[in-house]
Every structure is written in C-alpha cells, then in structure tokens.
Amino acid sequence: MLFGLGAGVGFILVQQGVNQSVTGRSGLANGYVVSLYPLGAMLGAPVFGWTIEAYGIRATLAGLGVAVFAGCALTALLLRAADVRMHQEVEKEIQREEQWSVFFLLAAVFFLAAAAGLMVMSQAAGIVQAYGGVTAVAVGATTLITGAVGAARIAGGWLVDRFAIPRVAMASQVVALCGALLLTLWPGPLVAVPALAMIGMGYGFISGLTAAAIARYWHKNAFGRVAGRLYIAWCVAAVSLPVLAGWLYDRTAGYGAAIMIAGGLNLVAAYIALRLPKP
Figure 1 (cartoon, rainbow, N blue to C red):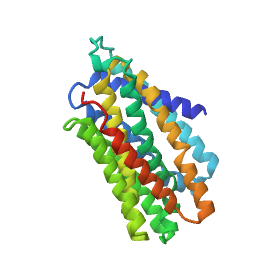
Figure 2: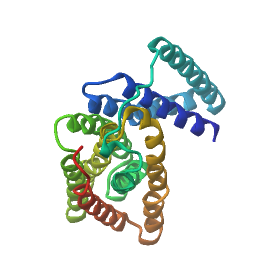
Figure 3: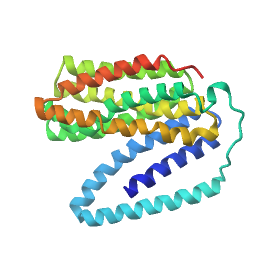
Figure 4: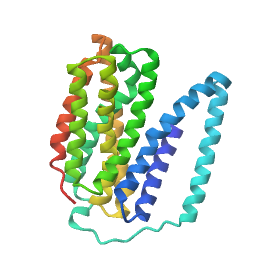
C-alpha cells in the first residue's frame, strides 16, 4: 500500500514536471516517461529472480528498499536543480477542464485497451504454455512482450507528434484486434508469442498516446490533475479482464474465450477512438 501510494504520486509528479518543461515533441517525451514502467519491470523481474535465489527474500526486499530510497533522493535533487515553474496559460475551448466528453472518451479507450493489454501482461507465461509452449519459451515470451509494450509506449507518444490522435488510437486497436484474431484462428505456441505481443502493443500505443493527449487537450497546469483522474481507468482495467481471464481458464481449461473478449474490447475501443476530437 505504501509503495503503491508513493509510486503513484512520484509518477504523476514527474509527468507534470516533464510537461511543464518540454515544449517541442511533447508526445515523444510523454511516451518515454510512461515506457519506463514496463521497461523497469522487464529489467527488474530477472534481477529479482536471481537475488531471491542467491540471497533470499529478506535481502532482496532490503535491497529494493535501498534502491527505492536512492532513486527518490536522486529524483528530489534533480527536480530541485530543474527548478520547474508552473505556466499560467490562457485556456482554449478544448482545453477547459470542464470538457468531460473528451475526458470520458479518452478514459474509455484507455480502459478498453488496458484491460486487453494487462490480461496479456499478467498471464503471458500461462497463455503461452496453454497453447503448447514450453516453460523456457513462456518465460522468454513474457520478457519479450513486456519490452514490446515499452517500445509501443514510446512509439504512441511519438506518433501523436505527427498524426491525429483519433487515427493513432484507432490504428493501435486494429493492430491489437489483428493479434487476437490471429491467435483465435491459428492457435499454437509459435503464433501465440507474436499475437500476444500485438495485443500488448495495442495497449502500449494507447498508454503513450493517452499521456500525450492530455498535454494536447488540456493546458499544462492541469496535466497532473487530469492524469491522476484518468489513470483510474488503468486501475479498473487491472482488476477486470485479467481476473476474468483467470476465472475463464479455471472453467474452460483454456484462454480462447479471454482472447476473443480482448479482441472485442479492442474493436469497441477502435470505434470510440474515432470520436475523439482533433486538438
């Protein structure tokens, strides 16, 4: 609980600072920031596995505490040196915080994409094994998929700097939908890895796009406030389809139904994405 609260505050704080400081290519900057979450998990998971086996769980948790403290102290020093100042900007019509229609559309797309993507990230190893992959392939696939999600987050922000937000959002969900269809029509271990990566990348694109879109639809001072509310959709997604996928597996001994549901969510997200305005 304490770690979650601290991580959430730190994440929004850093994003607010970045958006106050970066004027050009804000999409790429936001995509980079949100990509650090899966990339950190991709690097941290194997390190945790090695330290637990070599030194035990207590030493691993102690090392994690030291690393978190050092990271927070370094972040505080860097933020103090950056001397970030809040910008007082004149709000445009689309930038008013009262634009709840834009907020709910963006939150809906984020929720649907995240629900499908987090289902893949949370149970990637089990899904690959369920489709016939050996343990080594399943573990490697988990790392590969997590890395693909991180790269997609950077790409999602970068694409917003060049193309309209609705088109990028729709295209990302079409990619994820193709992954779900691919695995549904041709189930197997060799198809499972790239198909799951496509579903995860659809979520990654939307993550980078969402952070970049906040900076486009609202003024700089409102970024942290809007992002804090919008990321509630991610929290809801984390306890929806991933849990449902596990429940369905217990009753059907397979992930076919969960993959089809994920594809349906991606299809709905693509439709809603077209209704987003062009900032």
